[in-house]
Length: 163
Image (cartoon, rainbow, N blue to C red; front, side, top):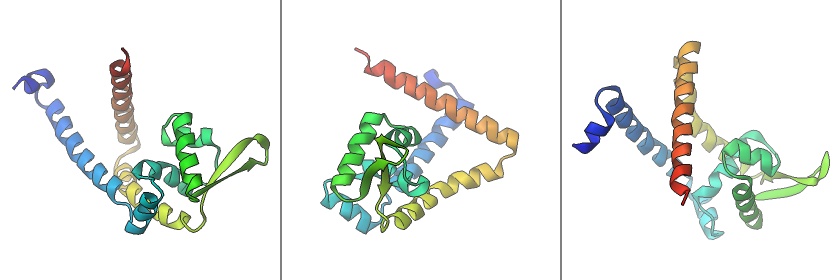
């Protein structure tokens, strides 16, 4: 009963129910990696955490680690570690940036690109369909709500990490 007192009734309860439902669906989609790709990742000691890098490269093409980190919302050091692990497994390549030899450009293996891009498209479909059903004003409010929610979660995570 304490939980109901803390979060109230009405909109808050509905948001919590919807968030729980969304998280179940998101988890199921995240876990839905085609068997052969999942097996390849496992064989190389890799896991689902590497999928965001592969998806970012398959959908958006070759890019620097910094650009990729920003796109997939990870710290550059974490992204670099994932890229190095994928490179050792032969799933991505790292080549010098033709415009700036001090930087490297990361790209996904050509044979893997269409499969990962198809997986990304399937994952993005519900998001695209949702936005398509909203008017421009509704879309702006919807996205604003997501930003507020995620910013507050980020802030809460940072607060919990502090000693």
